[in-house]
Length: 420
Ligand code: LLP
Image (cartoon, rainbow, N blue to C red; front, side, top):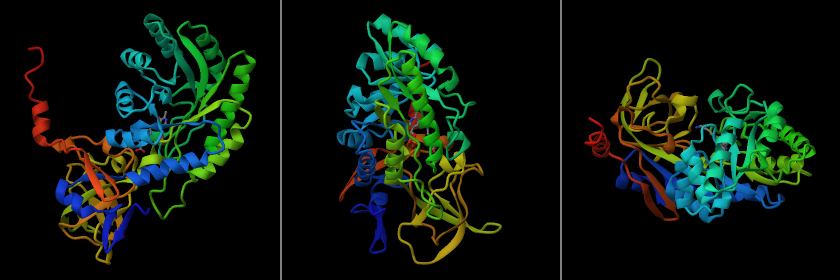
């Protein structure tokens, strides 16, 4: 990725040396490249060039940083949201209501009300009970809710069991076999305008085959729904396309391959297509910058103890995720080491027996491909500060989330509130 490259032996984000950011902000810190995310969005859009008027609704959950959302909104992206908080963030970033789709199995009444009041393109409703609550609320507010059902196509896929959503046993969507009945019932509800279908089968998909199977089933359902008299105008195909994390593995299908498959499978559908890419837009545009605290001998390989931990980047602990680790200023020597954080759990392990740049105490390292599902999943476990975020644009950088330090955490826990 040209947006993170070594120049004169030192890793840069665009034109900014990472060491300068570490110096000014401290570590650990997330660093994002504006150019990389815009390029990813452009590539996805180009891949859909032959699709008429697609709605590209960036999955806010992947990286909800306000500055990141602003960059994507300014470039014309819509938003796929899953909470009232994400609705607010999308609107604050300037995403117009008619580019917002709202997914999620557990939308609360207050969240539905927020989106109804402010407007949105479509609720992706995941159960009949949700449809009934939404209809009643819409009627009470004097609104009509634009609705599509999220269909569970019984196609399981995803980079890890915990991010697979389309299998029959998962909590998501209504079973494809019950869809006709569900649409018939929902069509009779007074507060809804039911014009859409939606599907999302999982994340970090490394093959197009399950997506194609799910879309094919969705296409058949659209035909059946139309035959039953439903006016289906929108098909939301979700997100899920994977990104390369490990250069030693074959890369996932490209956006171009995905676009070609979509065009082939959806030709003749006669619906507006919605896409919800998250990881594809931001993952490769970010990294986590960290400093080596000390080295320690291990039973087989040495431990590299860094100042980032599982609370800053959860993905390895949660999904056994693999993030490439590089020295900011590699000395040319390689070794095999275990990279761990300071948190008191063995799960706080980023890499085991990893072949990587040889590093010393005090050196800076990066975890690559950490723009998606990384800063947003950070916590303050072990009373560690919340990691700051920096956005780079050319030779300028901006602190777009400050470090939420221990003073702030302690203060938040010491308020005089409560009811006693
Ligand atoms: N649409 C819906 C309804 C979703 O649930 C998701 C992701 C997306 C779109 C975006 O999927 P993407 O294009 O980013 O794959 N924390 C996990 C990933 C969880 C994905 C949840 N849903 C990870 O770190 O791998």
